[in-house]
Structures are given as C-alpha cells and as structure tokens.
Length: 142
Image (cartoon, rainbow, N blue to C red):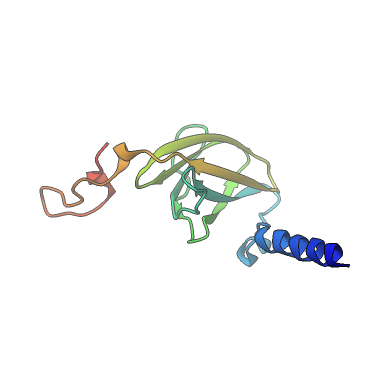
C-alpha cells in the first residue's frame, strides 16, 4: 500500500510540473477571409526558453513590409490578414540575434509559427540615447 501511495504522489508531482502550452483565447477568434491568410506565433529565447516580447515583421515576396506587431508577455503574437503565398518573417529582440524565417501562407487558413531567438551579446544596447537625444532600437550596438 505504501508503494502505491508513493507512486501516486510521484505521478501527481510529475503532472503538476508538466505545463502544456495553452492556446491563448485571443488566438481562438482568428479567422481570415477565404482569400486571405493569418499567422499566429510564439517567440521564445534560446536561453531558458523564456517568452519574448519580440517585434514581428512580415514581408511579402517582393520584400515589402506587410505588418508589424509586438509579441505579448507570453511571447504570442497575431499578424493581420495577408495574401497567401511566400512571405518572410523577421523577428527582433534586444540581446538576441535577429531571425528571418521563410513561411508560406495559405489563403483561408491560419498558419502557426514558433521561433526561438538565440541570445547574442552583440545585440545589447550599449547607449540607447542617440546623438540628437533620440531614444530607440536604431541605437542598438550591432
């Protein structure tokens, strides 16, 4: 009996530690028009797999910026409706190397993407105030 109790407690502990990824409710209402596509995604760091509030920039096949969004604290993002076909998705976050990922969007569908950004000290801010007093990512140390 004691062994069965120990096994039940161990199983409960393992299940409590396992945290399956739950789809945020904001993603459940995403449905594009029949001739359009949408992208939902999640960005994490290669360092401990923590979620990142990264900037997501999708480009069409001609290299034109189609949208821009900032991931939420859980790393999740939703990109607006776009035409189907090949696209590029660039993701940026301070202290991590940028990633450009190719994606193929399908009209009338919601495509998902999960991206891990690699921690890289070359992309830390060394002085975020520019020569004219401005502030922002254009002053990142590259």
